[in-house]
Each structure stands twice: as C-alpha cells, then as structure tokens.
Image (cartoon, rainbow, N blue to C red; front, side, top):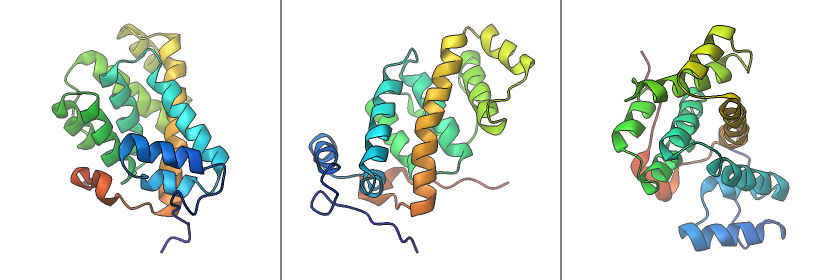
Length: 185
C-alpha cells in the first residue's frame, strides 16, 4: 500500500493550495497526481509549468499525444495513459490514434510513426540515439527543435510517471472510463 499522502485543497501545504484550487476550478476535482504532488509545492508547480510549456511547443495536438502516450505506455503508467486519453479527447484527437498508442499499434501516418519511433528510442536509449535514428527522424520532416521538445515532454512525463509509480496513484473517477493496463505478449 502507498505511504504517500493524497492531499485535498484543505490538507495541502499552503503553497500548493492555489494550484489545487485551480485544478478544481478547471477540472471539477483534484486529479490523483496533483493530490500526491501537492506534498511538494515545487514539484507540482514544475509539473504544471512543464505541461503548459510543452503544450505551447511546435507539436500539434496529435503529435503532443504521440509523445505523451509513447512515453506513458513505455513507462507503463496506469494513471497517465488514462489521463492523457482524456486530454486527447478534449483536444479532439482522433480516438483511433489514441487507441493505437494505448495498444502499441502502428501510427496512421509515416510522420507520426517516425515521431513515435524516435520518442521511443529516446526513452529506451536514454537520449543516446543512433545517427540512423536521428536521420530517420529528420527525414520525416522534423528537426533539431523537435528533438529538444521531445526531451521537454520526456522531462514532464518522468515527473508524472515516476510519481505515479512510487505513490501507486489510483486512476479515480475522473479518468476511470479510460482505464488501461499494458498488454502482455
């Protein structure tokens, strides 16, 4: 059982309260991830800021979803996969793309497949991608900016995925309709 505290607006440290109040105002409730992160206001703030910064990068909604979900699935985060499925729905991303990511299936376009493959290589190789992997990514129409933005997205997802792992964050009612577990071969 998790020994982590899942804060409410009332129990959170003072510096975290405004961020949790903002979540309630925006989403109607405090997501489990935020409830855990509230114990460290700096971590919660960093996560929220990284999320917003990544949302404002050069990737469109489909590409953001590919980066997030590729990392979430590879990290086997049973909280973030459902949460980002909900986010993808709110961004009007084709549910077929989201399902392909959740089920580790081929992407609908060559460009999205190249983004998925390169993001996966970044995670698995800890950034030590080969020249061939970099060349394939660039050949698909991406550039140095997008390599750096994948690193930005990865930094956001490491914070959330690892937090959810150590805290054993339950999906909760907010995302339970999108519950997910990794399929085993």
